[in-house]
Every structure is written in C-alpha cells, then in structure tokens.
Amino acid sequence: MRILLVEDDAMIGEAVSVALKDAAYAVDWVRDGATANNVLQDGEHQAVLLDLGLPGRDGLEVLRRLRRAGNTVAVVVITARDGVDDRIKGLDFGADDYLVKPFDLNELLARLRAIIRRQGGQAAPVLSNGTVTLDPASHEARCGDVVELLSAREFALLHALLLRPGAILTRDELEERIYGWNEEVESNVIDVLIHGVRRKLGAAIIKNVRGAGWMVDKPT
Ligand code: CA
Image 1 (cartoon, rainbow, N blue to C red):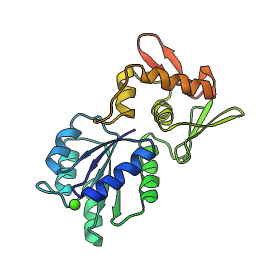
Image 2 (tube, rainbow, N blue to C red):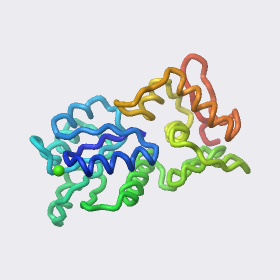
Image 3 (tube, rainbow, N blue to C red):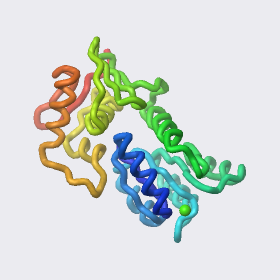
Image 4 (cartoon, protein in one colour):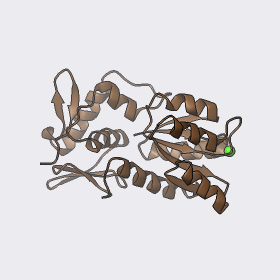
C-alpha cells in the first residue's frame, strides 16, 4: 500500500512518515501542492494524506483539481484548520476523511485502514479470501490453525494480493505497492518475501502464474 504524504511542515512530515513506514506502508513525501498534483497523475498511490496550508497551491485546490480530473484516490485531509466550515468544505471538495492537527498517529492509522478497506469494497476490518485471513491492525495472518505475525514487508505483500483476490499482480505492481521512491529495491526481493509468507502460512497461499505474476485465490 503506497501513500503520498503532502505536508510542508518538516517535523509533522517526518513523524507521520515514520509512523506510516512502521505500519508497513510505502511512503512518498512531497512538500507542495503542484508537485502533489503532478505525482498523483501517475496513479501509483492508493491514498493521500493532504495538508491544506501549503506553499503555492493550497491543499483544497489540489483536491479540487484531483477530483475534476476524475482521480478517485482516497484522500485524508490533515490540517490545523479546525473550523466546522473548513471541515465541511474539505469533505465536499472530495476528501474521504478529515483530521485536525494535532492528531494522534494511531488514530490516523486507524482511519487509513478504514478508508483502504472501503476502497477495496470491504466493511469487515479483517481481509480474507476464505483461506487466509489478514488483520491490518496487528499484521497477524491466519491460515487454518496457523497464526503468524508477518514482517512489515511480508504484510504489505500479502495485503496487496488480498485486496484483489483472483487478480494477478506483476513483480512491478508488487514492488510499487511495497516500496517508496527513496528505497532501494533488490532484484529478488519479491521472491524472498513470497518465500517468507509461504514458509509461515503454507506454499499454497500464494499462487505463481508463470511469466505473469502472483495471486491469491478468490473466495469460493
Ligand atoms: Ca502546512
């Protein structure tokens, strides 16, 4: 799960980006609105944390342009503007959620989990394809009687697959969801992660579709 953080305050940006990485998200951080709009055209991110008071292009303007262009990426506004009018405006401009600074980082993570599961068409807090179950809050995976805690990146990999059971994800698509811009990606890292998940939960959990990529089964 790849998140774009749009925040001009160095301290807040650092704190949020560390918290997101600890929670197994890939994070890219930009500090102004025009860059945010440019980056979001690529469709690499599954959610955006958007400050409103930004140098140059204001966060609301970023949001307006995004929605006008038909971009449906999930947006959580994070801002010091706490007036009820501001909150209404933010939501009416197309934000999915609105969090007033200072906010609790754990609350931010919980809200992100909520909008991400809604985005995947799920209301239940735990992801499952009927065979394997994954809890995004604890990073615990369950398969039959086996319960295992996944590493941050194993979690990110299985999460990406379980959000779309039955769909094949290529190596590039998986890497894009697990790593941010500044992170070195070793060429065999996806194989290593898949091996790790299979070792913990069983080899049949993740299917390899030769030459195409990997998938988890659809619920039967
Ligand atoms: Ca700001």
